[in-house]
Amino acid sequence: GLDISNLRAQSGLITFDPGFGNTGACKSDITFVDGENGILRYRGYPIEELAEHGNFIETAWLLIFGELPLKEDLARFRALLCAEELIHEDLLHHFNGFPSHKSQPMAILSAVINALGSYHTDLYDIHNKSEFFLAVGKMISKVRTIAAFSYRKSIGRPFMYPNPDLSYCHNFLHMMFSIPNKHYDPPIEAVKALSLVFMLHADHEQNCSTSTVRMVGSTQANIFASVSAGICALWGKLHGGANAAVIEMLEDIKAGNITIDDYIERVKRKEVRLMGFGHRIYKSFDPRARILKKAAHNLLANGFDDQLLDIALELEEKAINDDYFTERSLYPNVDFYSGIILRALGIPVVMFTVMFAIGRLPGWIAHWYEDFENPTTRINRPRQIYTGQTQRNYIPINFRK
Ligand code: ACO
Image (cartoon, rainbow, N blue to C red):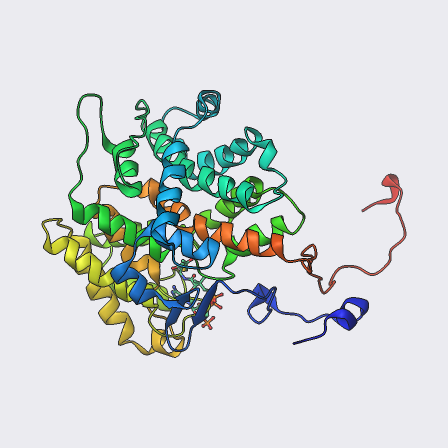
């Protein structure tokens, strides 16, 4: 390995790496990505195998604790998730601090996750594995309650409380869509598709939001605050916000505001980006996009109808056969097809990035803990290349021009 003790002592040498494209900020055992060959593995398990045989909760355990769970692990985890699904009644007041209609679920989610920490200050400092386990259960369980409540708030509807008899994804859909005296009973395909979407978003090594969680965590900030910062980082349309931007783009084409060919021409003139295309790491097809493309087809073949899929397929076909995109290695990423699945499940666009956040939470937690456990973690503090003025003398106000 590299001996960093000398590097620590030196302060004169700075590498300039805009966007950190070539900077390894940490060592990590969690997720392996080979962008040239389109390979993604969680803790060594290929994403394709996990997608075929596993589910979101099992994947969350794998990412956070390092191994596939045993039966008793899963039973313990499920019991904890059920026990933690409610949020403190006082915490509900936070929702009232947001406008009734048109409130932004991402703003609510990041604020309430941070506020959640102040209801569990005993977990601000984690001393042992059982405290960590409890923090994991609280966040993974409550995030979907907070997310669903943020949606109900955004449409001005009363909250629907969780039902402990339901599975993780089913329970979330229930809190989203049930109304008093009429429980929403989603088809099994919908529950499975949601679990798949969450699972495929669960981790992706040092992406912007995960790096943010590690950055904030490196100050020894608590896990709730660190995750809340990650949620804010995810919000942007170049990151988690891309799934909503994809649907807006496809809707625009469907509404006849612009043709596919004209959209591609605008992309080439660099007026807009082809949303859901391109990736810092993947220079070939994103393996998650491959799985989701198939899942979108399956779902739509099972009675969920969406013309946007046809537009997406045509757009993809044109782009991947166009030199502008191939020269820049631009292929569909995870967000190109996830939005179509979410739409088919009835999830409104304003919730798309929140859905990404629920999926990414296990990854954030796993990375936060990896740094937390590592005794060599230092506060993250990049350097800069200063380009401002050299020294100047102070000018009294009457002499300034
Ligand atoms: N559409 C059109 N052109 C693109 C796109 C795109 N989606 N992405 C990159 N390019 C072009 C750039 O204009 C640039 O071209 P140039 O060399 O002629 O200037 C070249 O490809 C390289 O682009 P960068 O911006 O340097 O790539 P970077 O690695 O910084 O960005 C990103 C990656 C942000 C994902 C980018 O591809 C993008 O904006 N995609 C659209 C948004 C999106 O889908 N984001 C989701 C990412 S995945 C996720 O968060 C889960």
